[in-house]
Image 1 (cartoon, one colour):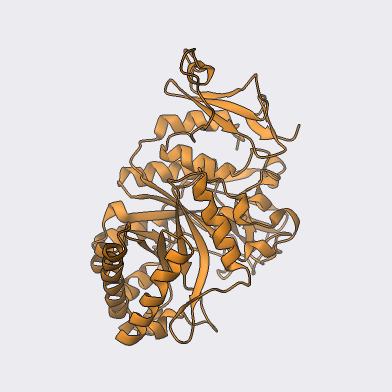
Image 2: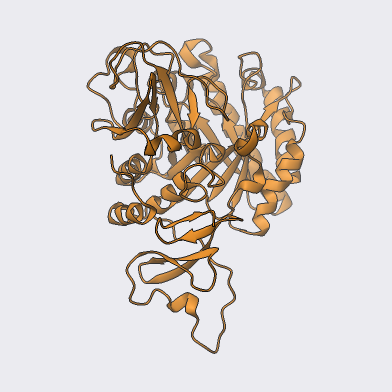
Length: 455
């Protein structure tokens, strides 16, 4: 597969994008701060103009049904994240609450009684206001799964309705904009049918993020893609619906509002250890490949751990599923790249879905140190594919003479161009408009690759 330059990729995107999406919701994790060296991620690494929403993952629920922090420095990082809104006031931030305690969701106990739910809600809303979050993201993936607790399906609906009522009343009481309520939800058909009253919760939530990844992984006996768009002819039995198209169809058939559904674009891949000489989709496998040097989790590689392979091994394409994979020795990895992102965006726009989410910012090449395409190559590519306007410039503009910032692109085709006055910035020409972008600190714009790189 030919490796795309940033400009070539932009050209492809401009031919397929339709501006229907309204949200690009990006998750960050509080455990990524513990990755070594260049893998360490903090809120300061976030580009405040990259996403419409950033979700801090995660907080939890204490045994006495109060919202609670997890990491020793969560409150410090809350402040760092929300300080980004002084740079981009349009940015919205949410706090995700969930996870598990000894393999059990903390929601299981909390939703069990009206008293518990009231206690949580009355602790959560002032906590969010205190730390300047714009909303709450409910991590509801596991309760009710496999029919183990079918009563939680109804309890979740009741909780969401009570939360919505409390949020609306709180906004009236304090004369502020109501907090946003969203939820991360399962992509697996059997779990969807067991865990959610779809139409009821869709009417109460501002948006739902379908976690459209982990359809396949090292737990399977054969290779399969982490986040395929469509079904493969090899899929059968209990994995026949393990693809994004089937997941969204299930949510829509249940009565979900299309404009509230987001599909997740993973910035990581799932790995397998090949057990025979076969290397294609469906090849026999025996567990995960070795852990990546930064993420240090078997069967899981960040995009920045994958992208260096792209110049040394062939990138194969699964036509049926519109996603790539690569093989290095006995290691097989199914991941996402520019081409699969573009295909998924075109598909979600055809259904008029609400937009996209990213899991996660810290797994993209967030500092531009691995892939040589600048910071956040995947998420920036996704932003452009979704049709969001290029990031704004805060460069002062004179009122009495022609401004080169606004006139640079006159007569030029769409694309990226160096700024002759400042090598650390570059221009993007888009539909006759001129936009100024700045490289990450320490990088300069290189015209040959249309990217930010070390000088």
